[in-house]
Length: 127
Image 1 (cartoon, rainbow, N blue to C red):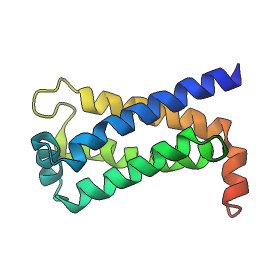
Image 2: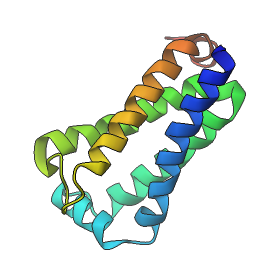
Image 3: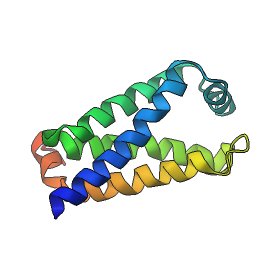
Image 4: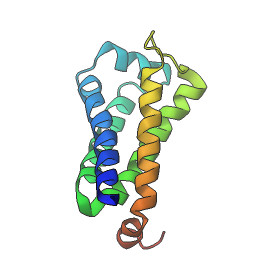
């Protein structure tokens, strides 16, 4: 049961993180707008995209799920912070979709971090 739930959460978080990479790396107008609003264009767009790519790979690799969840929480917390402080829940008429997807990633990664906390302690013993 834990394995099935784990895979559902891992896939959900990884798919959401991976699908945004196309927009970030190709310079889609929506992505540029978002990162201009928070004063992080273009380095923030590329940097967060790279971190999201790494987090997704770690989430899908069974031996590093905990680390991927920790990294996923870190990067998505930044997105949630900017939605709540400067972007707003709704960005360019998206009905809040980006914010709600960020919340899904956060919840999935939080549950995964709890399930795989032992992995994090093995990989990063100072925790």
